[in-house]
Image (tube, rainbow over all chains, first blue to last red; front, side, top):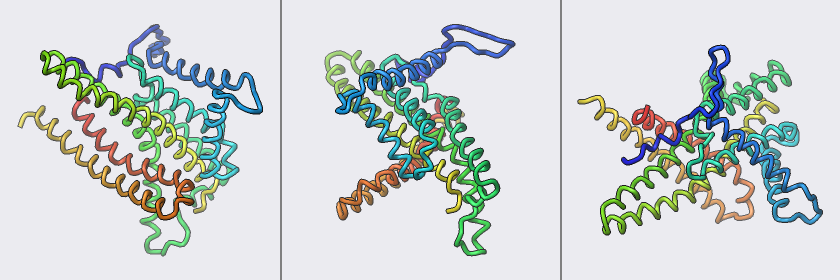
Amino acid sequence: MATDPIHQFQIQKIVPIEIGGVDLSFTNSSLFMALTVAGATAFLLLSTRRRAVVPGRWQSAAEMTYEFVAQTLRDSAGNEGMRFFPFVFSLFMFILVANLWGMFPYFFTVTSHIVITAALAAAVILTVIVYGLWKHKLHFFKLFVPSGVPKVLLPFITLIEVLSFISRPISLSIRLFANMLAGHITLKVFAGFVVLLGSFGVFGILGALLPLAATVALTALEFLVAALQAYVFAILTSLYLNDALHPGH
Amino acid sequence: MEAEAAKFLGAGIACIGMGTAGIGLGHIFGNYLAGAIRNPAAADGQFGRLIFGFAVTEALGIFSLLVALILLFG
């Protein structure tokens, strides 16, 4: 392969900073996280700058995003879930904008690193555990003991519930990271085929049209995945928050 | 067998898991579509559950993809 498909995920230091032996450098990852926050903030602030009763194109885009997340949260966690709306909306916008920034060539995809997605998932799960314990005290553990289960089965069901709770942060972080990583690697591999075939003369260039078309189609698919993964993260966060709000099944 | 060859074989075998997750996803979307055609009015309300089922099923396929990626590049 002419180009290494993993190279795009390398973290490079832009401003090396080291404090007390801890590496706190400003990397390309930090740069794109800052760009993500700037992009999301600019989108929401600029589109609602001139608030009109009949919204324009930008304002309705912002309102649709807001309503979409609000509806998702309300459907899965009820009206009490709306107190977590700022949290869920921030997560959704951060992941969506980070994924979309990553779609530009030569840009760094923040969410393709497990350390980022694991931090986001840990924030969600810690919120669930801390809020659930604070609100329901020990009743929170009813989450693991569903009612209406025969006594013989109860230990097994509880074990399965505990295991499924433990696997939540793992699957939440790995899903997002692996989807973005795999998508970008696939794009890069197909783009590599275009270059490789193109170096074989006229017939090679004709053959290269095939992976080129595949690259275009995959780019479209990646845009879908970028939006879908942000939605999946938001909806799973709402469902987990629902467990913290209403632990009894 | 050389360790490098075993790595590639393992990565290929791990990808079988992705295929089986694909079967599961096909079941989810196929059944959703079948239900949606029978009762189109109820379809939109179940979209969230569809995506939830998709996400939970897809996670298992992604795990095997991760195993393959770790074997290839890790």
